[in-house]
Image (tube, rainbow, N blue to C red):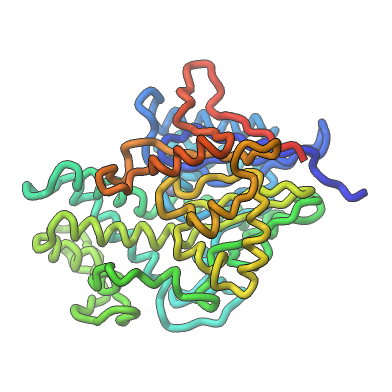
Length: 439
Ligand SMILES: [Zn+2]
């Protein structure tokens, strides 16, 4: 019989508002293969020491669990709460160096992260047809805007409420470019003997093969690339037209009212990128709500570049959707030519890593949640894990709080739920909780 894991161990690390899951495929007492899916935080719970100490502690624990050898690292998308731990600088206690020392053989990221992709790419380089529409460049421009938004939130004008300033700081920080982490991910993938993979819906994950995962199927369900669908870059009708001007785009979906000139301008000895300058100059005229709405659009768009992975092992199915929101999901669940087969596959999910820390827009209710057949109290009761921190994101009055109360209640009632918030990580305690799936 072909080689196949007999169980899968999922370690959900306490990283506050962030994600960090070590997925271990156990083949025998001496042969376990480990895949690290995301490693980041934007805020740790108060009882923990800062990222310098805690993220290093998590990295050391991962190294210990995998015996210093990672089969693969997956970074679902570029947000700080998913990649900050890969940074090699002292802010995270050089946690990324510890992970790099585990020499992952595959580094899997969404197609939008391909460093060789032209700024106008619609797909990873190896897929190579391109249009002149600047999606990758747009994602990049966001980081500069995010940086500026964070600064405004840190020194808010008197007219801005404390709550709005707090949200702006959070969203700004999440979307800032994490240069050290991004560079480490590229370096890990280009190491001799390693392979970098940039995947999209339907493409090969690169995780399966001799010496990698064996007896496991990995389906890449998202993100679609722009030749499959443009929805991941389209915004809803209610979104401000300003967004596309902010990106300096060529009027992709909205009117081109105030074109942004390329280049940067020096102000007071500091170089301000063109986009940020445009942003700054208009900030004074925007209400706090409008400002937040623009930054939220940036946040949503990056979430929609999230990898969605489904692992299938001997009839057991594990779903890791990163922070994919509805626009990314809708391709896999509704619009893709194989959407019907995908829904049939997902009906049998045994383990669900709850999307986007339990936000309301990442677990499509009808097509995903209600389609899970193992919800409820049967002997095959579904397991789930959520990594989240209350009070960080959204607003309960607007029913946008994360985690969303109604979703959390449904998860508690209908699945066996592991919630990182329940883990206080007292001194001497392990920084993770363990979920075991028998195959
Ligand atoms: Zn996230």
